[in-house]
Image 1: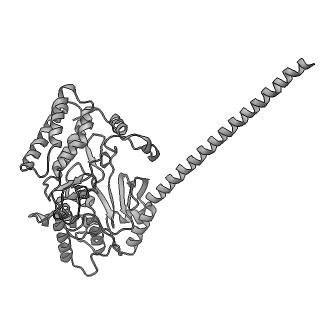
Image 2 (image 1 turned 30 degrees about the horizontal axis):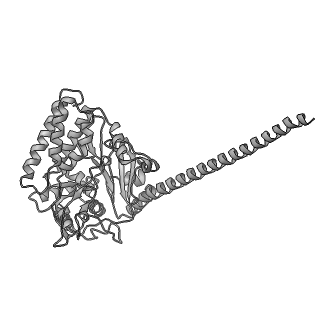
Image 3 (image 1 turned 60 degrees about the vertical axis):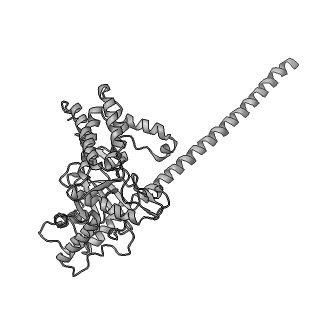
Length: 429
């Protein structure tokens, strides 16, 4: 009988241990499931909070249309936005709450809608690159301002931004032509208020100045300080936009390598790069002064189906004259205090306690730095050494060099010629 009890006791003990282990497994998986649900809910909540904070297109539209219906502002896009409903807000692309950016459509045309929220943009002429807050929206020009007085306002504003030029009157006329949204040959007070608000934005000024060039998106229309530009189908210039939780875990070095995997074929990269070099040429001593490109990150650029480069974010492309005026007033203790945007740097005059006005590197040197890895990866073997040599010579350009302008032109032409020779016989050209 004892022998019969032993197996039974052993089986009972084994079953008991099995039950205990099963309970531990259940508790473990229950905890992991709860943790996954908690983390997932937290991520969704943070993403939703970020989205609602960043994406306030409805608020932007309501603000603009309220001013339009009151007769305060007017422009070529107002009726479509506020009455006909043919200007449609699509996917949110905003990266900052006060700069609303949306993919959208205007009838049959795809565009990007950009709108400012909360802060009224205004410049103290020649003193600030960044807008400062004011209490009133669309407060200038005031009622009773004549067209001639408005011209003087625009001329003074532009003189502070792009400097004294022989063709400044041509730029003023160009601005007034754009301001005439309904094309009736005159600028009404509501149109003038919209134009004045838009003139505070570097990106709009650049779009007007370079409206005949191919590397900046065309300004399609405006209403107040909301404006619409053509949409660029492929952005950023290279790489992928990862969700922010993944961004935290991807090492910077690996991310730089990974970004280079997601690029077009090398001949197409060469054509896109030529486009960036041509854009640098357009803003370097252009018809209405020089501009500094202070954000050379890939997210600032895109390209079309034909692999023509387009500037997609021109907020940090600033007139050089305004940049120098602002830097002269910028207090500093070290060189790190003398930075605007991402890439525009000057040095600190420690004796005076102010930044020096001249940018350390010209646009071309910073463009070559942005293109180096992009162009060298996959470059034809017979071309690689010469291309690398020219890129490094380009990156060595300094803004304070005695013959910088001559070297700038020489290096720019040599690089364009080298790249064109490689693709001029292919369908990519």
